[in-house]
Image (tube, rainbow, N blue to C red; front, side, top):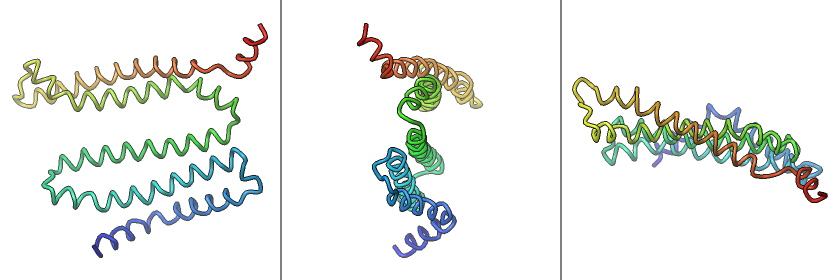
Length: 197
């Protein structure tokens, strides 16, 4: 137990500059003269999320390998698990930065910004999810289609055919979904114009 705590603390030491900025920013935003302002609330939420993320991600990184090895995990299993942890970690960071961005922009600007970025965000998310799904299902698809495993042929099939096909399909679906979702909500001006007519 002591070695895990020592390892956790030693893993936090390189992060000290970022942790200090996050704590200082959190305290500063909470002490703002107008704590009800949108920007102050956004900074509090985003910095709190980033601080919790740093502490939790470090704890997972320190404890997870030993737990997985104790349960008989292979190096391949650890690689996949850490890729998943990194992906979730990136999503949390993106959410925090999005909260800050929404606080910096006004409500109208945020709506306009989201409307413009919706298809791009949807496409990127679809690309990543489609590629991940292709990687997960690729071997089973190759097996079902009778692709031989001789000299890694099935692996090449997965990497060169299944993953790109799933990623492209996911990107197209994501762009369509992002475009649809970003245009679902009307701006207040459009709503008022409809009310007047």
